[in-house]
Amino acid sequence: MTHRADAAEARLRARLAGVEARRAAQRRAVEGIVESARDSNADDEHDPEGTTLAWERQQAAALEAEAERERDELLAALGRVAAGTYGLCEVCGLPIPDARLEVRPAATRCVEHAG
Image (cartoon, rainbow, N blue to C red):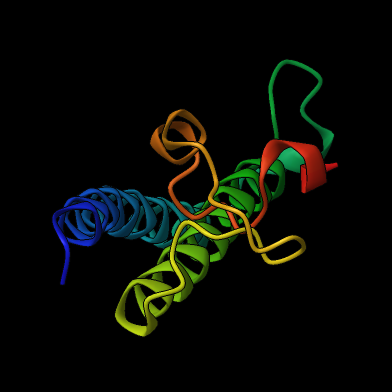
């Protein structure tokens, strides 16, 4: 592996570790909300003073799903590192600028083809 590939893999693995931690935290949040609702007989759906447990559960579940999506993108990027195609635009085949990969390490397209 080249120095650039080694650096890319390290960056991707560090980001993946953060995403996995975020995903686990959101899963615990969902479980906590479900558990607290199980022990409560409050009618939060009709409480005009606050958010509902259902809304909080959906919010935490959406954040967990977002972390799962990012995890999948990072795993795919690690696959591209192993295949030697990481950092190449999937449309034009030209290198994706390092600055873009710093911000979006799982990027598959250069700036010109991103939109």
